Image 1 (cartoon, rainbow, N blue to C red):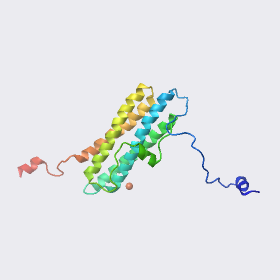
Image 2 (image 1 turned 135 degrees about the vertical axis):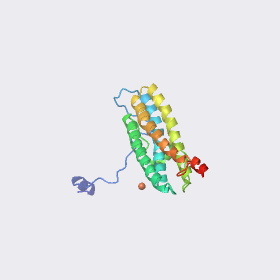
Image 3 (image 1 turned 30 degrees about the vertical axis):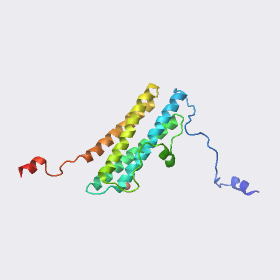
Length: 199
Ligand SMILES: [Fe+2]
C-alpha cells in the first residue's frame, strides 16, 4: 500500500495542504438577506476601512498600556487595557458584519497596515500626553469615517450596518474619547487656585 493511502486509511491528519484563493478580497457572495449586490459591496468596503483602523487603534491601546509611565501609570495602565478589550470586541463585530454581508474581512495585520488611515507612531515610547493625544486622534479618524459611513449605508437600506456603526463603533468611540480627554485637563490635584491665593 502506498504511503498516502496508508495515511488516508488511518487517522493521520492531511498535513501541509495548500490551495488556491476561493474568494478574492473586495468581492461579495450572494446571501438571501434582501440587500443588493452593490449595497453589500459598498458596506463591506466602508466596514473594512473602519475594521482596519479599529485593529490599529486596538494595537495602539495595547502598546500604550505597556509603555505608559509616571504618576498616573496604574490608572492609565488599567484604563488603556479596558479600552483595548472593548476595541477588540468591535474588531470582531465589524469583521463578522463583513462576513454576514458576503464579503471578506481584512484580517492579516500586514494587510491592515496597507489599508489603515491612522498614522504610524514611533516604535519607541512617547511622553504620556502625546500617547493620549495620539489615541484621541485615532478615535477621531474612526469617528469621522463611521459617521459618514453610517449615513450613507442607511441611504442604501443597510440598516444592520448603520446600527452597528452608530450603536457600537460611534457610541464606544465617543465614550472612550471622553475618558482619554479628561486625562489631558491640567487641573490642580490637591489645592485649588483659590486656596493657594488665600495663603
Ligand atoms: Fe496587560
